[in-house]
View: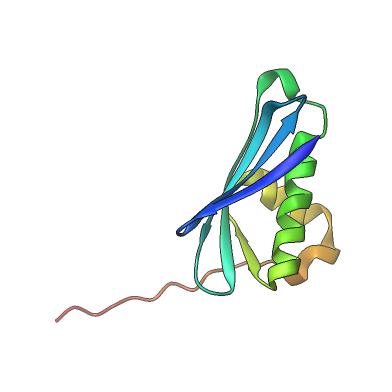
Length: 104
């Protein structure tokens, strides 16, 4: 299995390939200089139960470690992986503060 990273503007994805066929994808959005939002993971039906999601998650973690950025996990799969491995918490942003703007 190979995982390719692509990015353009404020979006990016990790795409997994098995035998030159796209097996799955994990997408993210850039949320500033030091964080990304992991928003979606999808594995093609014929590649399920073959560790594709895990390889995509490993690529995400390698990316954030290399670039010293953190992850806001919107994607349920990514969120569950962070919950399973507490050692990864240093790369996680658990809560996002919202700011209310008073329009007068």
